[in-house]
Image (cartoon, rainbow, N blue to C red; front, side, top):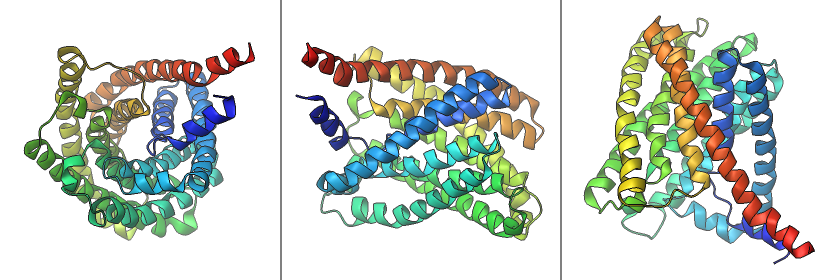
Length: 350
């Protein structure tokens, strides 16, 4: 198979959730920047920005060249929620760019992400859950369903972060932040119920405990970060009405995110060590890196917003776990690219 054909095949099977790569790199870069490691943070930012531009181009190519595959993904309740990684990836990248003064770029990313979030928020539940002829739908409920929550909270964070920059839009941005934070909170409850019912009603095989289940913890963590950012926002009617409530809930949600860590680690051990499921590279592995990075950021922001130094210290320490995970998965991704794309091309040239 020639190189163009190989690339075309990779685009055809491109996972809807591949923007988790941008989410993971962007959030780890943000954590490194907050801790003062600016060079390492800049490297991850550049890699994430290049990845974002590449994935946008490949996704547009796939949309026009492989519409049947895109429609199939939208109708698959086990994959459709992965499309929300574009929303979260855009906002995570935008928030990180704001740290370097790229306010206009972050605003453009927020507008595009918010519009996409609104459209997908009605399209995906219909095509993948309500409108599909496949039954029972809950049999395919998995960790990707929590990505809808992550996307919602990412809009809240971006809006809260942009409020001090665009003073003429401060009330609109405050309303958007509180609105999407609240929607995300209720979506988490709904996704949690659906996934829990699936785990109780249907057999849970080791191969079913895939990496996206970590998003359940990442969704909690980003809800904490969004809440902390809202608490720190300038006065606005929507913020003033909810500041105390959000501050209290953020602490409770952080506690739950912390509680989720041991079961997730145990599930991975059970899957890969006990039942020997191979740990090969798959794009879903970025769904582990992002929650680890987001948990670290949640601790740092919550410790600052609510004056909880112990929480902040936990987040700062856990950041290095996220950095190590990013390096490991990135190396595995490069190896896969070498094996699937580059090495065959070199062999063909010979």
